[in-house]
Image 1 (cartoon, rainbow, N blue to C red):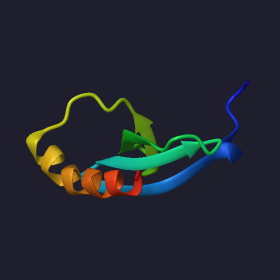
Image 2 (spheres, helix red, strand yellow):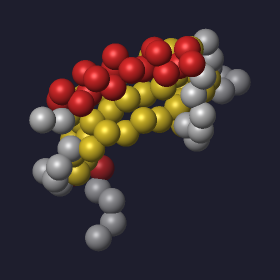
Image 3 (cartoon, rainbow, N blue to C red):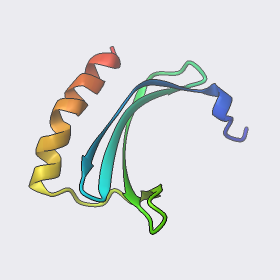
Length: 78
């Protein structure tokens, strides 16, 4: 069964910007299944638009910035 965007429900989503990048924390439920946490990085391209990028490693500043958001996201998963 292919992925259907209509079945993907965002329970929680918040982003934290760090200069020309941002980290997006989200909780999503696909087809009413158990909600799961997703962490993604986006960066501004030459046109100033946000574009998906591999998350990779986080700096200490990034970790400290997203930890409160992750805590809020976990509360939404219950």
